[in-house]
Image (cartoon, rainbow, N blue to C red):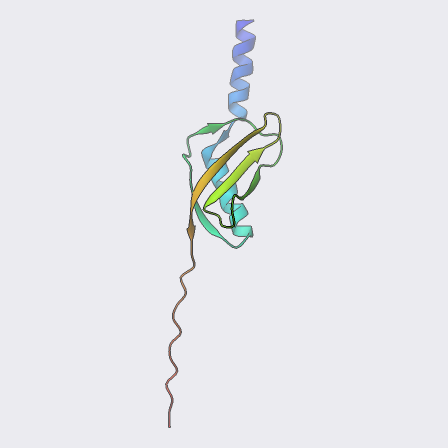
Length: 99
């Protein structure tokens, strides 16, 4: 019985989601919405497995705080802080008038 429990535990650990996987999914989802973000989440951290697609959305009106949740097999949710990268807008060069 102990061996069976160890094998089951090892299989569940292999299914766990890493912080790096969540970071990649956050970046992809934000890009689809036209945002560049750098999530502040430890890549080595482990999360419960998720059999469904992760739900990823901004918590408020911007992407500084992002809700990440899973519905199955274990319902869980986390809030991830992120740096939102604003695009650098080059100043327009003034057109010189020639007379």
